[in-house]
Amino acid sequence: MLLGADLVKEVAVLEAAYDDAAGVTAAFDLNLLHRLNREAGADFDLAGFAHRAVWNSALERVEMHLAALRPQVVHLAGRSFRFAEGETIHTESSHKYRPEGLESLARAAGWRATVMWSDPRRLFSVWLLEG
Image 1 (tube, rainbow, N blue to C red):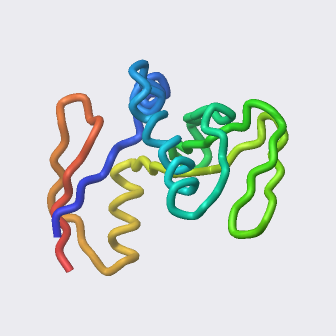
Image 2 (image 1 turned 60 degrees about the horizontal axis):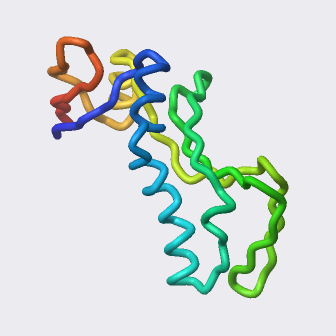
């Protein structure tokens, strides 16, 4: 099996990737609320939420959140959900790996890592795993 895995890297690099200046990731994240409005009859005010990307060092992952910019009530599936200002909806976790951690994870799943390729800066890796 070939497996691509993003590697742990400097926080500044991760923040630039997941909270990009062009707002691409923010638009992708906010699209979740747009789809809930369109497909599930919710009434999220998209302007009432902002994208936040947070590095969780303990779990070695970037977490994407949509943070309420003000107190608000959202209706979905016959229920009301209250959001306080600053309260977040955790929308995604993007895990990063250290080579030894990924090898251990593969081994626990019954795979053996035979080769790892990486770019010169060790930002991303591709693994050949054998079962």
